[in-house]
Length: 499
Image (tube, rainbow, N blue to C red; front, side):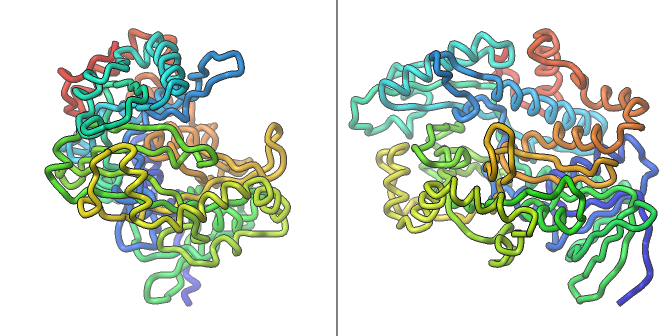
């Protein structure tokens, strides 16, 4: 074991989209900082960021019904949809800056234009969707949204879904032509290629075993390579962006902000179509409504995806349960995350979420034919031989004590936990995740580098023109950003109808 200690300015743990984004932002803000990245797998973006492991394909709140809720008075609350859409617009601006600055090339390798649709069945759901459409289409962020409950129009929009549909049950859909499909695996790899060119040292097959604070306030990391050799590193700032693997490292850091937090792992499966003739008949992301008792991340959707320049069709996700925190994790991850400070929080969450646990176990036990039955609610004539099962990535939802939810509340979302002095931050949670990576990493920068922020703001504004502004309150800015990002990212402006 080596006692030699390497000092650096910044260490990023995990080579996913979050570390890639934070590293790229920091390199633009302070090019001379020394940054090191440790990833336990052999290449970047292989866990949650991988294109086959996530549905996270451009979540802009244009079609996800779980971002809009009906209030007791019957009105529709679209505040979460506004927030997620504004965050996605921030990502689009940053990616455009990278393309315009020639820091990354060929944006079509990671982003393509694609309509986003919401689809519902039944009178009650149709009434909800119409109210939702009326609330959203008045908002400048969602201008251009179309609504139809006319079967002929729906047949035009989604022929594969409407063909051979025997039911006369009312159906309705909304459609936004300004949606996109984003391949976050490809984007992650592009960003790490860029960081490598900027002299960022990226160590693959390196596992961070331990992390502790040194007497001088810096962080000491014990890192083991694939040959079992231990190396020691020291840094002023550490970011833990290891997906589901972030929680154990946050706990090892011992910071008080990381206490009383647990993790609830949810696994997933997709059906992927292997018949090109079927794939060719569908061109949209179509989101339905989650079943009663299902977690928000289990909203059924039929997605056109562009992976390796090939059009694919995915349906799902089917939720499931595994105690692993990562696909490549250990069966002891969940039990190992239970500590004296979070045991009551975890027990409370278990008691509160018995129905969810039961639902996840039922999902695990579904046969392929049962999954096909669910798919046939979307595609009535779907044939089993055209579809294969694909295991998606693991998601670890945050469990914490909250004022409104009480002890052991299961959080659906993305959360940054940072030390009071800003020397360490960890990213926990899941969806909308990757799509909001730039906003979330700017939050890390604001929390962890308050003293430098003022000096950095002009550069941040150069990269993200809307930084510090509310897009909803600036419709003209929405138009400008939409035009500039569409141009920079090569998105077909003829298809876009926003504003």
